Length: 523
Image: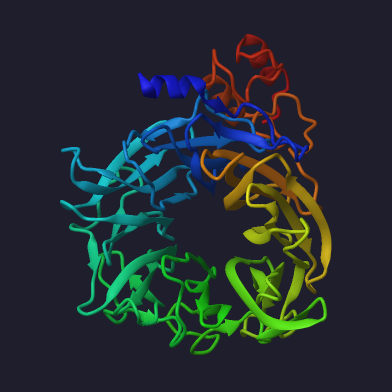
């Protein structure tokens, strides 16, 4: 009864990406928490959006067309979980247009924790579900998901202080080897942190490794072959030799496009961000400890010198092959006042910095006083396809945030700045995905308080224009510029209900919409 009532009260996305920052596109808004949005590219310019909702933080996924319209009659309930709290999970998609999720749930007995991978097709059908790890009483978290170069999918999870990873057939969900590869080390902890594809069907798994609660927490990289074996050292390869990653922080990383990876993280003493490149052989090319985004340990704020800290990096690889890292910048306390800003740094392929020794300021420092600014946080790095940018939060108070986006030129200068969302409430847990027509789609959770959260989404293009792309092709349901079998398939799948194929906006997909598609057929 509760589930039915909650679903009945849910607000589901059947509108386009908004051009008005005061009313961003609402993906999910219920009386309960709707949290932890993820994005992955779908076929024909669409985007998959996943999240947790309902009383048991159930797993949902929706598919939006290029304009932001929901392509299904309702979001798909992937898993009715009945959990009381959440951990991280993974979302990925493949070249065939299928989505894959790695998340924690329960085994068939309803008691034992289990890590699952589920596959959802472009039509919203659940293709399969597979439990790749389960054991009584274990703690599972940090679910990760990726698609390898050979099309097989990999799911990973932390298991207490260890990690488990599995390779699955994308068509059937069958595991390539059983049991899942288990990564453990005597006298040390190896906790799942990130997962990305390498070459020849292999993948790279990153872990946070440490020995005691007081020892340094450092990233390690493990390569997994298609049979589950690990060709590198059993303890993994150290991404850095020194520095301590913040407790509870498990940074993901990005693939370099050549079988290697770019890692970014921040250390606690000092508070600073670093970027490392690892090639496909496991060699670190940005030095033993990676390259810092800035070298100055102090700065001048309002005429007073204070410690300069950098945290919470978000990284993206541009079309030019360089890597861009955006971060939160803040001063030490000056008479009880902290100055906040958002910084950025660009690294050339050899690890040298392209934007000076200390990077650039995407949003300059302001003091947290007199209602000027309460805080600033990096939301997510943005890749528009032809350029890069940064989405960040300008907070006037603990419960009032504005989401902003800025585009940067290759020399680090700001080309534009746009308000993404200024509706009331907080905004956090951002995710982004590159979209067609040199744009990016951004998702986040937020609400009027830090308790109840909803899921929102926006699209911004590489010139800073907010909202759905301009379209002039009648009958083009998926926004790819053509009216063809893809549009017809979407229309038939939504027949009799609402959806993106409701071309005359009368609230139902019917014969009138079909006539529009057929009369404008182009391919």
